Image (cartoon, rainbow, N blue to C red; front, side, top):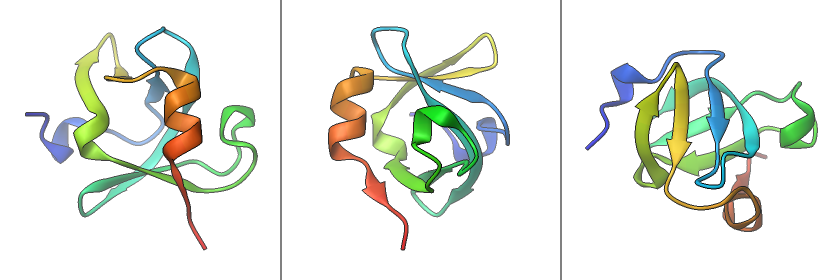
Length: 78
């Protein structure tokens, strides 16, 4: 299991298909908050659960689902 401490601010988040999902703003509890000012995140903060993280590789957070699957299931921060 990936430890939250391994995930650093500004790391790129990519889907299992290698496509850009967003950039890490910070980790909040059991979720990663994606940076608002990232075109991949649609200029809004989105939250993704740490359970979606498959591995950390080459300074990237690699998810266990595709970009499209992540974007259809992420939670918008209000």
